[in-house]
Length: 252
Image (tube, rainbow, N blue to C red):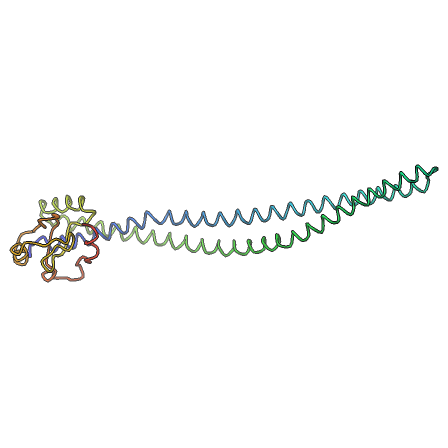
């Protein structure tokens, strides 16, 4: 195996993990924002239910006040009716009293309607308050977990970047430059295993002689189709550093 090849495989593994960490670090603030937006929807729902209930209660209170006014007016009209001197005055007082009673009945009917409407509104408010408390606790827990995860990801990222810097310095500069050029063109995947006579990244067949040379060459070899750096899995000393085949095959 070429002296740089083992380092390149390790470097590729580090770069893929670094990319994954950066993506996760970038996504966590968006996740927190989504949770807070969901919580805001619950808050707005509760506020709407509370506003509807408050409007119901205000109207009931207003109607109760109107009933008191009409009752007071009715009482005064009755007193005045007793002092009426003519039938015409008596009938006028009677008519006003009937009007007041009609207004009282209308108000009482509307109050009954409002009371019926208030029952589901009150249930909605209680349910929304309970749901909001549960949602607040859930969101807070998830936010704390997101903050913890972000801090851990950043710690790991710092370690990996340091390890990467040290590893890159050990690779032949010309080979490292080629690795970076390929990585930039191939969506971050510059190194791929070859098996069964094919490049596992582009899936194209390798020339038989090229494939044979790959097993014995002391030089870094590049796929003649996609240009990636190739290696034979059987030659890798530490199989734990092998690139998962699915990771490279999806980046042709």
